[in-house]
Every structure is written in C-alpha cells, then in structure tokens.
Figure 1 (cartoon, helix red, strand yellow):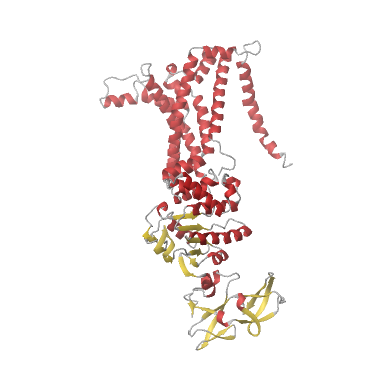
Figure 2: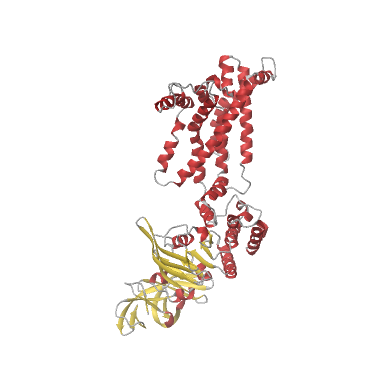
Length: 281
Length: 346
C-alpha cells in the first residue's frame, strides 16, 4: 500500500469509532440542549441556571475541585519523587499506591461511607477511645464541614494515583545528567526539585492536571454515596434532571456547561504550563 | 593554588572493583588528561573528584584541603558533562549564570560574569536562546561557559567533545586549550581519544582496568611507554611487537635478525613504532599484505614471521602487496617489554 496513505488507513477505524460513539451523541446532546421542540433557544440554559440549586452546585463543584486537586498534585509529586528515589521495591510500592485506581468511584464512596456513617469505623473508634458517648451522625446537615471533608478525602484517596502514574513516568524522562549538573553547580535537593524537576515536568503536569481537573468537575458517585442531597454538585444535577425530573433538555444544558468549564480550565492549564519553543527536553 | 592530591582511592560497585588504590598528584594549573578505553574507571575517578560518587577508600585533597566528604558545591570545582547537560528550560544566559544564582550572587555581578564568559566562548549573540535552538557545538560552548563563569579552582571535563563531529571537535579542542590556559585553573579531562589527550594534556594518566598505568607528559607516554598496554593503546597505528630471544650479553635475536638490547636473560618483546622504520638493505624481512596510501604517508601492513607488523612509509614509495621489504628500525626508538610483567625493560 502507498506509504503516504497507510497512516490514514490505520487511524480510520478509531476515527469512525469516535465519530459514531462520541461526536454523534455530542451533536445530539447539543441539539437537545439548544431546543425545546421548536427551533433554536437558550431556554434550557435559562431554566437551569435560574434554579436555586444551580449556584450552590456550581460553587460546590468548584470548591471541591479547588480543595482536592492541589492536595492531589502535591501528594502525587511527593510520592513520585519518593518512588523515583527508590531502588529495590520501587515497583511494589508503586503498585500498592495505585490500587485505588482499580476501584470504581461508587465503591470508593461506599468504603468511605463505612468509615463515616453513624455505625461506621470512625464512630466505633472514637467511642472505643472514650472521646464520644453516643454515635455522631457525621454525614448530616448539622456537619456540612465533615461532609465536605469526607468527600474530599475519598476523592484524594481514590484519584491521586492517576496523577502519580503520569508524574512518575514524566520524572523518569528527565535525564540524570541535569540533576548532576545542578548538584555540581550548587543546587540543594530542594532547589533541584524547584529549578529542575518541576520545570522539566511541565508536559506531564499538563496532562495530569487536565485529566484530574476534568474528572473533578465530573464528580458524582463519591458525592452521591457520602453527601447525597446534602451536597449538590453539577453532575448530580444533570442526573436529577435526566432521571428524576425527566427533563432531557435541561440535563443536556448542564452537561454542556460542565464541558465549557472543563474546556476553559484545560486551556488555562495548557497556557500556564506551556513550554516555550526550543525549551523542551 | 589548587593542587589536587588523590590518595589511595578505591571504588567498588558490589563485588566489582572499578578503581584499585589510585594515587595521583595534579599540580596547580596543570592540564591532566585521564585516558583509557571505556570501562577503565576514568569517569568514575572524575566523578569521585566531583563528589557525584563516593569512594570506597581513600582521600581527595584540593588546594591542601581534604574534600572527599564535602558536597560538590563546596569543592571549588565546576564540571562539563559529556551530554552537555545544558538545562533545556533555561536560556543560555540563565544556564551560564546557574551556578552563580545558586550562590546568591548579586544580579549585576551575574550579568557581568555571564557576559564575559559568553564572549570568551563566542556565544554572546545566543544568550537569549534555549538549548533546543542551539547546535551541538553551541551547546558545548554553553556548558564550558557555565563552568568558567564559576571561576573554579578546578574544572572537570567528562569526554566533553565526544558528541561533536570530527571537524568541530578539532576546532573546539584548540579553543578549549587556549581558553583553559588563560583561565589559570587546574583541569582534569577524561577522554578515550588519544589524539585529544596528546594535543591537550600537560600530562596524561593512562588508565587500564581501574589502575593508572602511567602518568607522564604526552611525549613521554608516546616515546617511553611504561607498560605494553600503553604502547599498544597509544599511537595510531599502534606499536609493533615481535618476540625476542636472548643470544648473549645484550644481543637479541628478533625474527632472525641480531639486535642490541637490554642485558636480560629471558625472552622479551621487541617493540618499535611503525613510523620508526626505514627501508634498508638489511634488517627485518617483511612481506607486504595490505598497502594503504593515506596521502601524507603510506601505511603498509606486513607479516614478519607470521606476526602482524605495520610500517608508516614515505608516500612517494611504491609498494605492492606480496612484495618483500627489509626494515631497519631506528636504534634509539626500539623498546623492550617483559611479557610476564608487561613492564618496559631498560
């Protein structure tokens, strides 16, 4: 076969697959969002955004992302640096740390529910230690802070590993000679991390952050398990419109809003962490 | 003053002994080349001096101060790496100034030093660029400038020219020699390229299997190799060796020819460099096998009693394969080696 055509032929199946199962549904969802049965309209968006729950779920989603992603980033960087400094046992530690990746988000939510619920591990432990007399209902409307914290913890526990894996691979790509040069020219371990590792890790940081931020805006199952209706988020609202209120147009509109936020943040991350021309490894 | 003393340095990686009790003194402002084949331990020795590797035994002193327990930055050294290690995310300016910034040097002093060294290395127009926009030779210059900007007591270089193409290597070699001579620093330079070693060094330390077999001036190493290894490693083409049997008091039989030699009473090896042979009426009889006209010279590979034997002859000569030649070795260039100890015999 003509070698100039071959690459296109090879990517044809996946292109068709994406068009059929991604692009086509996307077009359908967009049509649904921008119509109520009689031509183009923004009515769905006006309905959705003027509802009293929208600002709360919007704020909650952003707050959660703002609380979770930086912690995950810092943890993933720390863990990746530690893994990279290890000799023997490195792979074992990496596998153990990535176990949460293999657990579905709903299961992760349920695991943390078992800790925080009224008859959960946390209550047993605290009463065992004599800190409390009777079980406390942590995940109730009286403790919004605890609900938020439980969701954030579950998310951090569940999804830090995806960043870790990307960052470990990225750090592995940085030639050792740069660290040796930095050491000879007087950079302390801390300075080497700030002046060599972080800047050279920008491409991996981009990937890890984009992936994590998008997933953070799509948070749903963990919140459903731990917060229920106490902690409304955008994805939960999408679900409610679609399956409880049977309003497909409104659900599609929220889905598109989430998409717009995700695109906005992706562009921002790519812009902030861009590598100037000629400055890549 | 930055005299370097290496005292009894040994390095083991597990059960593998990379360096065997190295002793070496390098004088202030001397240009010392560590020369050897890959795996001989020369880079390990350099990395021990730099502080990137810890010795298993021994001490390193620079300028009368023991430094082997100090971190690299406190040793008064700067280094040029084989793959340059020019930081890709920093501009040329920031690369050259990296070490100075780490010392928290004031901005105007950093600028002054960076500009001066960039000028010295002829890269003053490139200071705003990233390394991805530079050629290999330019990156090399940045790496050298970064080391010089530190105004170190000692500059360490690990095969710095090995990634450059032949012509550029020749040019950089001469330039490096000039720049370093003016900088008044002590230099240690690791290479496997003997021509580079000969052209740059005040002294060459020839290393073999984790030992220094000879440390001497280039001419000395070339003319009077201390061991058979040095004789066979240095020189292109290498020295010729022929077995020699003693006849009587200082008389030796080499390939059927009588020669004057040392007064030992055991079999030795006769050695002569290919360029120290003259065509004569009597002498070693050789049959030409391969004739290679190299422009300046004629390289003839022959067989002398079944031993490979090379001669570098005048390019005007016409020699054909199969022809029988008679060589007279220059008497004062003949060397003798003990095949048991591998050492030179006077």
